[in-house]
Amino acid sequence: MRNDLPRAAAAGKREQTKVLNRQLILNAARQVFAELGYGAATVRDIIRATPLASGTFYNYFKSKEEVYQAIRDEVALAIRPRLHDERMKASTVEEFISCTFRTFFEYVADDRMNFRTIRHAADNTRVRMDTPEVIAGFEELREDIERAISKNLFPPVDPDLLMAAIVGVAFEVSERMLKTSPHDPKAAADFATALFLGGVRALPEMQHHEESGESNGELKSDAA
Image 1 (spheres, rainbow, N blue to C red):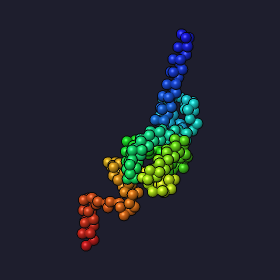
Image 2 (cartoon, helix red, strand yellow):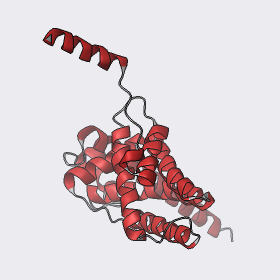
Image 3 (cartoon, rainbow, N blue to C red):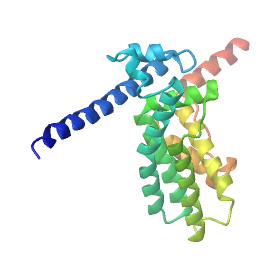
Image 4 (spheres, rainbow, N blue to C red):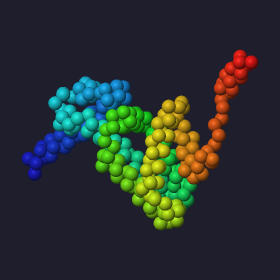
């Protein structure tokens, strides 16, 4: 028994080191991808952003694509339980749609670096989007929609198409939300929910800022 204790302690320390090293690589990759863009970034850039030796990287990942996929899986693992829990509380179609968008947009606003890393890589390099955790998240949304249909919260629509539509709107609206300052997850969720529930005619009209009105007035005056 006494001889086993040092071995167990050593094994535990090795596992902790593995977890730490992997997280160092992922954190460095997020920073590098955000600064350089996924396409321009290299494995060497990621390694330089860590205190690790160059050979250590390849003990955990074979390429920068694998690092990117690991980041995607981390994000999916973090957001999926929150989304599922909120959808399970919904008692109406309005609650189901609004809580899905609100929870997602709030997460994106709180975790901007991860989201921008994912979107930049996916949009500009066509890297794989079908990581296991991401696929599981999409499938979970589809199953939640099917469950809502069985409870008569939704009409009997195509769950695959509705899932794809929700995912597409969620990602694209998030991208736009992050380009505004300050970020407004509630406004983004209200917009997306209104679009889904009522169509374009149900969307709130844009409110023109005073600065915009003054500028337009000056242009009209100058033209006159």
